[in-house]
Length: 354
Image 1 (cartoon, rainbow, N blue to C red):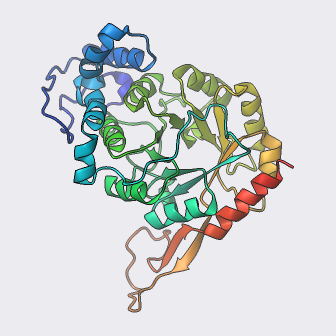
Image 2: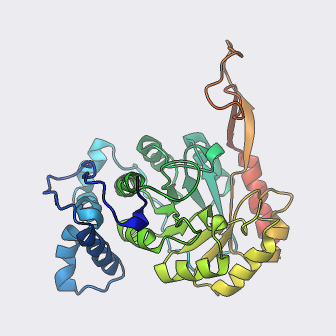
């Protein structure tokens, strides 16, 4: 199995997604697919003239797939049908900015959640944005579209969706890349307000080529580079790469075990960014260290989970069986976002402005 950097296709076409009938480009030529990625990127950056833009939206999706941009067209042109089919929430989302300038008033708190209950609790506690994942024990992987659909129906704050096909490292095979592209298209279709992803090369550099293609698929939505950033070889060089690619923000613990431990680097990154990209501290943020992290980093946004353990409602329990790995949490202890913790963190952030 090859990586994306090798530019070898699998010879297989991506699965069809919901939407109107469309022709499929059956060409397996890698060079043609790479050109399509470049054209799609130019489209996202507004580099194609208006007379060619409509045609390019349909024809120039990466990997020879017209589904990339047609999914968005289908969503816009058939919003009424989507609502009748239950593919979008009943309530409108709050207005969403690119986030490059940080929070409009004070600090913005992003809460990572993996359930509808946690999403609702995050909003009730005052979170400004949700990062929606599954598998938080693995650092977060792509959530189901069913979860996204119900979360969008349940909250009004923006929901950014994690695009990560598996746990582990951030060096992806061709088939894993196809999964990421399909998940981006579906997440947009089901109402995501932004996308979160990251990809590296084998030597710890940002995978520019892959990120360029994925950003083109994500647009016009804002994109966050996740904590794959903490695994790069040279974080200052990586920051410049993210600026060039056009990411709106980067989530980082300062390439250390927690945001508190990585605070010096987070400060350097924030100073170097100069407001061109949001440097968002995340990793081990609690009510005990938040004020120090905000004051020491100069950050305008921060990322946390604010979770507490809750005992299961199960009366009958089989303690001899575990559904996951031996190091995973018990099936009879559920971790959910804690409204009180979110409110406390919000209050600390507001007090840091005084």
